[in-house]
Image (cartoon, rainbow, N blue to C red; front, side):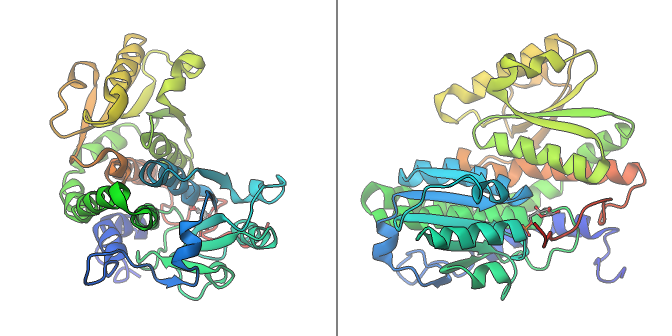
Length: 372
Ligand code: G6P
């Protein structure tokens, strides 16, 4: 078993360090000689895809958070409306779909019953179905019209890490593919993003070489009872994922919030010493979101929060209000989750380890939930 872990003490740690490959391999072979994107198993024609007027993403758990990231990116790149539905909520909500609706399922295992049932229901409604999946030959891709495989490799640890990054990458590929089909400036913009996307694996390597401080913070916090996570735009699902990892692995009460929502309720939770992670949008993010999140940090710090700030390299604005600054390399604002989630994964892993818990097999959880 030790050999299978490749020198790491847990599968989860190994899988975290495999993330540059998970992203790189998922990007591999996606362009033809003319530089145009190609998808795997597309039995949906280009004409049909050009006609798509609505996308519904169905997924559970971590995969649903990948879907939330995808919503921001795909809508921005294609102007096609995207909604994200937890698969178990989708089916019984009397959902609206037509033959011009593309229902995209996201699943690492391809066997999650809730997600499978959502896909079947989408079929009954006459929608096109596309599966983003990490497991060849599994049930969900077989039940779908088209498949885009993530190439993360087998994921053993129950808590998903590298599959999550590969899912986000696959969603970007899908969005950029749809943008390319739209042509014109959509296609030009897509090419530019694709370039940035190809730089992510090297940036992940750099980031993973820098996890000492976040590991140390996690070890110091082994007896913490509650941690909050704030993020905005694509940083919001990152905050939700950071909180989920901590619940799953360390059994700590953790909650993720949209930073803009803070003043509408959650700020009441802030008391002296409360640890809060803040995922800060890069200074280049449109609509001054960077400035707005920096002022959120200031507000909670003034109320005694212990601020653990995840910020882009070179972002000095956060420094006066941060108890800790965790640096991530710069990238395009919509691609940032591929980097900013990594310290949160490492934090949960190390805190769980410090508590002496079973990182790879947390209590009460299954890797793949094949019952409804
Ligand atoms: C389970 C796992 C989660 C995973 C979710 C969806 O609950 O514990 O880590 O995110 O299922 O799994 P899937 O295989 O469909 O991505």
